[in-house]
Amino acid sequence: MDSSINFQELFKGFQHTPCLWKASEVYNFEQFCPEATEIQFTQESEVKKIRLGKWVEHFVVFQLKHQADITILEENLQIKNNKITIGELDLLFLQAKKPIHLEIIYKFYLYDSKKNNVNSLSNWVGPNQSDALVYKLNKLKEKQLPLLYHPKTKDALKHYPFLINSITQKVCFKAQLFLPYEYQDINVAPLNSECITGWYLNIENITKLKDFQFYIPQKLEWLCLPKPTVNWLEFEDAKHEIQIHIKNKRSPLCWIKSKNELQKCFITWW
Image (cartoon, rainbow, N blue to C red; front, side, top):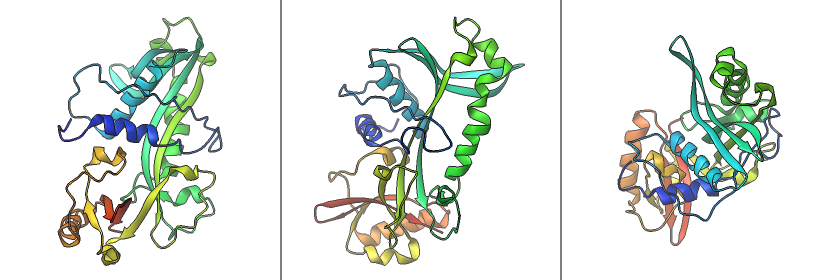
C-alpha cells in the first residue's frame, strides 16, 4: 500500500458510507450492514498493493470479528472445477450459529440525467460510464449469488455440519452517489439518499469552479472523507492535471475547497 495513504482514514471513510439501500428494497437483495466499531483498524498480515475492493473486504471482516455473535468460516473461497476457478464466495460466517453467505460491494455511481429510463436504477453509471449499477445487480442475481448452489460449491463446503439450503444470502452493498452539478434535486429512491456524497461536472464547464482549490486523490483515497491538510492545487494547475485524465477518458474524483468548505466531486469526460 502507498505509504502516503493512511489506512485508518480509509477505514473511517468506509464506515461512514451507508448501505446503498435499506432492508431488501432493491431486487429483494437483503442488506447486511456490519456494526461500526471504534476499535482502530489493524491489518493482521502484511498486505501488498491491493485494489480498493479488497480493502473493503478486509474492513468488513475486521468489523465482523469484533461482533460477539459472529464466527468467520471462509473468506474469498474460490470454487474450482478441474483446477479452473469458476467463481468465489466473498464471505461465509455464522451469526448466532446461523450460516450467512455475504457478497461485499463498494461502488461510485453518477446519475446520468441524459438517460431517459423508466427504471431510475438504470441512470446510475460508473465515473467512466462503465460498471453500471443495473449491470452489477444483474451479475449478483444471475452469477454471484447462485454460485452458492453450484455442485462444486457443495463439495467445497461438505465438511461443514450445515446444509447449503440452510445458508441465508445477503449483500453488503455500499456506494457513494454523485448527482449532476446543475440538477441535484433528484429523488434517488429506492436507493438510500444518505449515500449522496457530492456532484459531478463535465470538463467543458470546469471554469465554474475557478474560485476553488483542488486536491486529486489517488484511487484508494476515494474512500476517504475530505480533509483540509492536503497539498491543495490552484485552479489552473488542477485543470492541467485533470485534462490529462480526461484525455485518457478517465473521470477523476476531486476534493475542492472554498474558504473552509470541503466538497467531493467528479469531473467527467462525457
